[in-house]
Image 1 (cartoon, rainbow, N blue to C red):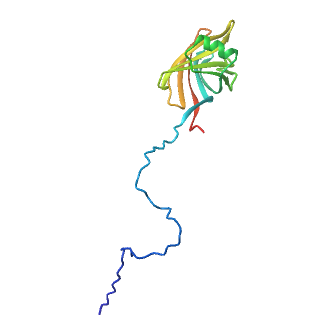
Image 2: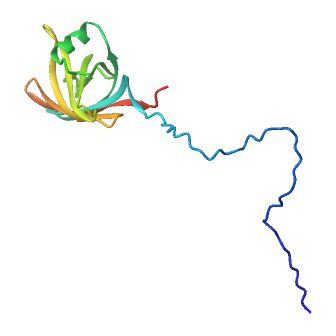
Length: 182
């Protein structure tokens, strides 16, 4: 003998007279749309400073050398170096003072000191020229430049120069904070 149990469930709401407690219904949907579009703030490049690195490659009398150093840079908005660079690059949007972590590379053949960089980006801010400056006899001098692409956070670069007749290739990157403005 088999027994069958049948359960009935109802999802139909019971409509009846409710008790009025005097409280207003705060969950009323008017059915209308305010039309207001709320846009989330978009991340932007924080230009005030950067961290980066450079790799130097050269073949010297002592052999081949490839060494890297870390960089730290701070944006300049005024001062003597800022004025000199803006005179050399009036279209530049940003000027940075750069301090490498190492003082020399490649058996001491490449000495590193404070230098400066300027950025001239296209209208979209996605590409442009990164120029490098060093201190010369008459003030700051343009030393090298690199065409760059920029994704809002990372700006890779590459350039070459000669040091005592030795070709030196440099590649590196500047990394900026990319954050939602407060």
